[in-house]
Length: 64
Image 1 (cartoon, rainbow, N blue to C red):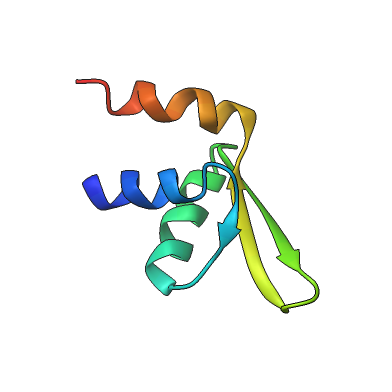
Image 2: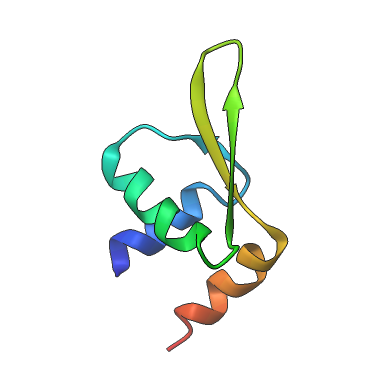
């Protein structure tokens, strides 16, 4: 769970997806509408970022 949080925080403002582990976590959270996907057409790489809901919910999920 802690590694998921780190991955989600990396994509808070958008970033290039670099590993299969990142993709797995992002796909999981995209089902709930917390992540959106895109593409860097110049570098031909997949990108992702948190949606407004994801940015709001991220601190709430791990506030323990």
